[in-house]
Image (cartoon, rainbow, N blue to C red; front, side):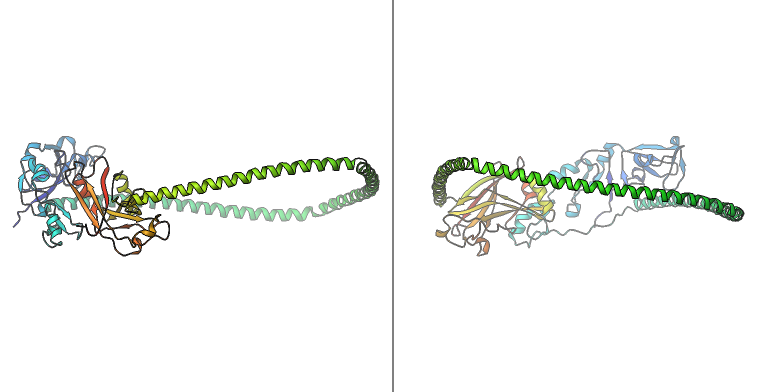
Length: 503
């Protein structure tokens, strides 16, 4: 039966223990635990009301004239607060349980030795199997996988609720105090809004009274205006009649003046039209006579000069065309020769690669590749196209996201090659991916067996779709933990393995 423990988070004692929960074999005194945030600090403040706070929470209790307890609202002057220090050596002597307690480690030891035990001596560190995702001890993963994921599976107990009732009560009291404070603030705000509403209502009533008064005043002014209009209407009519007669006379005079101006303008336009027609007739006659003289006198000389110039242009154009055609033919011949040389060179490279099966290269920038894979779900790293065993292919690695992990998968892509007609199809070679340790002392391998799928068929376009295998992959975090990654790069050997030599 497990002994009851108190689980608390300490702050301000050491870099190895700070901000990490510790399971104390014996409960701590209540004055060591902040009743607001639940942390165990180096220094606590004991208020007269016997509530305990850390420095950070105590500063949040500050008012204009002092401090006020968040749990019960009682004021506390600075002189009445008792500060208590928790010596580091006392904490380090206290007995705590291993951080792998839920993984089966039942070691109880002083807090000063906890980090050393956890990092160097504890055998209960666990990980998830890359095949079945079950929780397995790190030192039993290989045996677990060799047993077809049947043995060495750890039973992880469900997380039990916190048993520290005093901490729960303190949290509830803090929440209640905070709620009462908020209720008071909301009530004050509502009272203020109600008072403002009453003030605005009074202002609206005053505005309404002013509008009614102005309406009555305007009605009275309107009545007075109508009475005054009835008195002075006769004299206004007489004055308006005299004014209208005067305006009529002026309009008649203006109409006569406009009529005279219209007749004069009409005569002027008619004279201008006749002048233009006469000028047009004279100009046409003069131009015809000049053109006739030019054509009859100098036409033969002009035709002879144009003929000679045209013959020179034709001779020059013919010469240039002949030179251009010769140059084009020469360029095409050079292109044909160059294309033949390139094809022969590629064919020689393909034939000389019949015995080539192995490529070694470095995958650099793993941090960037990991970030892109986690963001988009995948990232392909292909080496440049190369002939291997006669096949035109791109060896490489395919990075794929699997939950929170990144898988390193063997990858191949087949391209159209110059000697595809003499090769065996579909592609029937297995390929193996080897990760080399920087110390050259160890390595890990994955073998992918080729299958009769369209990705391994003879390419009828520029290239086929790439092929990768998640079943034969590595976990990037495991490679990093085992020291295979150095300088943000991975040393890789990609090679073809015939089915007769596959192991």
